[in-house]
Amino acid sequence: DTAVSQTPKYLVTQMGNDKSIKCEQNLGHDTMYWYKQDSKKFLKIMFSYNNKELIINETVPNRFSPKSPDKAHLNLHINSLELGDSAVYFCASSHVQGDEQFFGPGTRLTVL
Amino acid sequence: GENVEQHPSTLSVQEGDSAVIKCTYSDSASNYFPWYKQELGKRPQLIIDIRSNVGEKKDQRIAVTLNKTAKHFSLHITETQPEDSAVYFCAARYRGGGADGLTFGKGTHLIIQP
Image 1 (cartoon, rainbow over the protein chains, first blue to last red):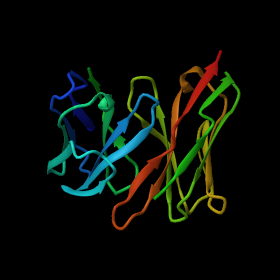
Image 2: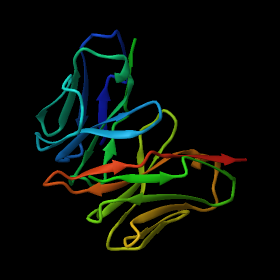
Image 3: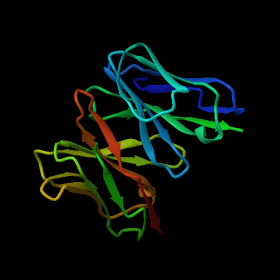
């Protein structure tokens, strides 16, 4: 299937733990993004990578570290998880920076 | 940076009536304005978009209008159906020193009453 995929779909963990979310797209896009959607449904960009290079890094705690091993993958590692990190995290990709974006299915992170 | 305001936050309409959602943006350099629909528990999906070189675009029951002078754009849904119930997001492309991205509005929860 041609798509943006993410794993895992659900992630429940304790405060202080470290976790990773993986994202892959097979659309041949050059740009990938991470968004955070909080309980009020607000979609906020966290990071953007273009061809494996970080181009957008919004005001995000440095506990969040994205990694792009190649232009089809953008993973998100989170250290020392806090209660406020609970949200749905969406990966997305686009052919052109800032243009039509295709979203992954989301990862619902719950920090207890 | 870009600031996108979206109104209303909740909109309830009778099935068959029209719904209008409005957004304003701050960056006059913005040139791309997509609308996304997000059903409960699902991913946002693009339903229509408009670029700054046109003032209106239509796709069946959905239309988008853009007023560049006033920096606002609107989504119009006619003959609403129950499956139109969802959260709708507007967005505007911002251009920042080689790093383009989308800024999203805060969303409108559209409720279609039977």
